[in-house]
Image (cartoon, rainbow, N blue to C red; front, side):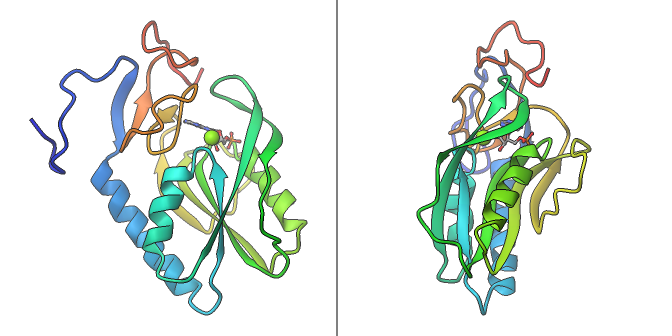
Length: 200
Ligand code: IMP
Ligand code: MG
């Protein structure tokens, strides 16, 4: 048995994986639309895309292909201190950018904005490097959790405040390779059984 895209269906989903929040076809359509919008907005000033690892790796790959401009791609890896499913806002740069941002039109490509603390740190850090412009494209935004407006230029989907995995997003480094976004109902440490809500 296959789904409409011809992929085999898991009749019994692995334990811990809950309902699909954003399906594969929906992701592809929205990423194409974001790419078209960015192509139009940046026509006369091709951007430097800054992917935030690891969560944004899949979104960055698909989005960059949907932008019909000579973009440059760079990556930065950040780790935030906190529990398995909650950020504390204290962010550590694990891998910095190779590119010099001075005078560049920088577009941060983020996987998900939850409290907005990681993004607010990143924005301040990159703004201090004198880019000509600095905007954010976030695939997912959790509804109602940001204390201040995260000022996102592009948003893929606004979703309920559940912990989600897939399409780059992980729980304890697992499930990043799912082709869609699903709710995580297992343990915060990534185990499938004995769950009680990952976002606790
Ligand atoms: P924030 O600082 O609370 O906005 O959290 C942002 C970061 O936490 C994201 O870049 C993700 O790496 C991670 N994160 C937040 N919510 C989720 C989720 O539901 N699933 C997986 N990772 C998440
Ligand atoms: Mg992440």
